[in-house]
Length: 190
Image (cartoon, rainbow, N blue to C red; front, top):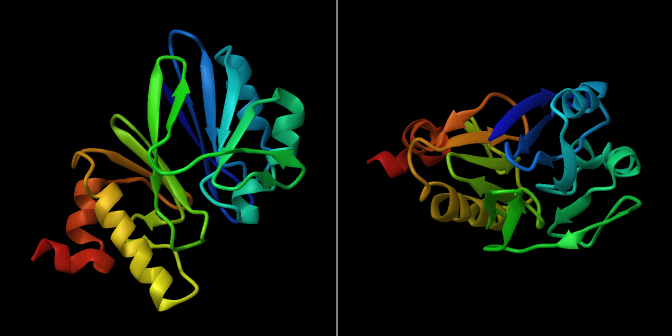
C-alpha cells in the first residue's frame, strides 16, 4: 500500500492518496483544490487515479474536483449524486470501495454535514471534518452534534485502537488517542 498526505492551500485542508502496490490504482480522498504536487506524485509513482472519495460537500473538500476529473477521469464517490460539474456515484454506510487489492468500507459519520462520510481501510480511516485530532467538526444544531457523536463512537471508535485517523484538517491521530483523550469524548474513558 502506498499512502501520501497533501496539505492544500484551500483552508489548509488535507487530501490523501492511497494506492495499491500491485495494480497501481489510486484513490484520492477529498479535492479541496488542484495542487501540482498531487499530479507530480501520481506521475512519479506511475499511478492511475481511478477514484476520488469525497467525505462531505464543503468547498474546501471539493473545489478542485472538476480540475482533477478533467485531468484523470476518475470515478467520484460521495453520499450525494452531484458535486459541482462532476457526477458522483452515490454511496452509503457499509459500501465497499475497492482500489486494486485494497478494500475500504464507507462509514456514516453524519453531523458536521448531512452528507459526512468516512472511509476505513485496514489500519487507517479518513474522517473528513467529522473527527479531528483533539476535536470534532462543528454542527448546525445540538441534534446534529449528538448524531455526529454517536456515529463516531459507533463507527470510528469501534475500529482497532491503533487505526490511524486521517482528518480533513490538522494532524493525524489514532483511535486510541481520540477515544481516550479527545475532550469531546472524555466521558468514554471513565
